[in-house]
Image (cartoon, rainbow, N blue to C red; front, side):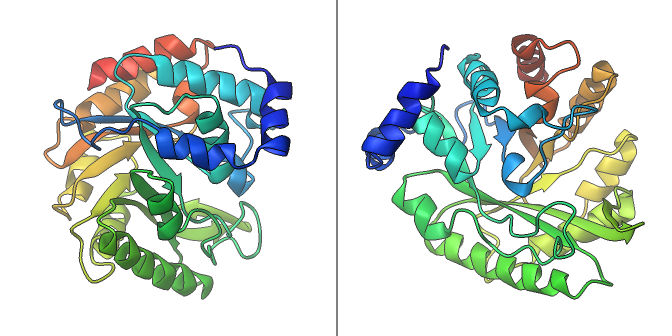
Length: 292
C-alpha cells in the first residue's frame, strides 16, 4: 500500500473529525472468527519510547516505514487485527486499513522505558470509554510487578479498575503481566515458569470479574516451562512475540509448541513480524498464519 504522508497530514490538520468518522463507519467483525484463533500485529512500542529493533536504535522511529509495514501485514490472509496506541490506530483508520479487523487499543504507557517511574505505569493511553466510543474491539494493558518498587502498586490498582471498566462495557481486555526487578538500573522481567505462573495468577484475579479478561503470555525457551506456567489459569491466552532474534525458525518452533496448549488462542506479535531479520514482512506474517 502506497502511503502519502502529505495527504495524511493534510487530513489531520484540516479535518481532524475524519478520525471519528472513519471509526464510526468501520466494518467490524467478532473478536474470534470461525477458526477460534487470533493473529494480532502489535504496534504499541513507540509510545513507550521503545523504538529499537535488534541493534537498530530508531527502527520504529520512522512512522511512514512503520505504517507501510503495518498495512502490508494487515493485508495478508489470516491476519485478524492490530494492537496500537491512538496515534497509530488513527493513522490506520484514515488509511482505511482496519476494515473487518480486530482493533485493540493500548491503554497504559505512563511508565516510559528506562525512566525512574517506569513501574508506576499510570494509564495514559486509551480509556475504556475511548475504546467503546470508537467502536474498537478490546483493550490491552501491561502489568509489571516489582515487589521492591512501590510504583507497582499504582499500576496494579489501576489495572484492576480498568478490568472492571472494560467488563462493565462487555469489552475484552488483554492483560500482559510480568514479575520483574531492576538489574543495574534496568527493568528485567523474570521469564521462569514459576514467575510467569505467579504473574498469571495475579492477573487472573484482578477486578470484580474475570469474564472479559484475556492474558498475554511470554513463551519460554523450553516448551514444558510455558506449559507449567499456563497451568496457573483457565483464562484464554495469547502468546506475545518479543524482540527480533537471528534464529527466527527457533522462535516459530516455540510458538508452534505453545499453540497446542488448551488455553492458548493465538499470537500477538509486533517486531518479530514487522522487522524480520531477512526484511520479508509478508513471508514472516504468512509463516505465523501457518502456525495457527
